[in-house]
Image 1 (cartoon, rainbow, N blue to C red):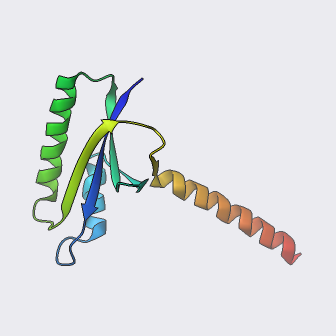
Image 2 (cartoon, rainbow, N blue to C red; image 1 turned 180 degrees about the vertical axis):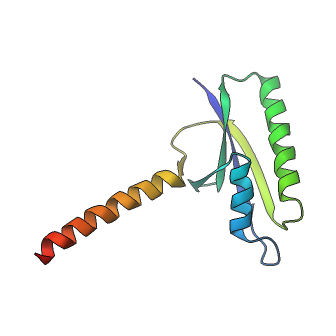
Length: 114
């Protein structure tokens, strides 16, 4: 099944909103922070969207993003493509891997201390 994703890159300005404020607003819109070439990803729910559906979704998400970030003094860039699945990693996946690694290290350290 083909799914589309809209990727967003954000450029912050020291006189504008804090990164945590921007992240909060973007996650409220349904964007997920990711590691990769872009900062956030919005995964469209529909499989095999028609061109008209995709165009409407891009306009809707662009307008919502513009309205939400208005006055925040940040620049952003939108990019919508078919999801390739492996071109980004959600931060929650990275956090879960780091937590597992921390537990493993703690276990090794406690075994070595015995």
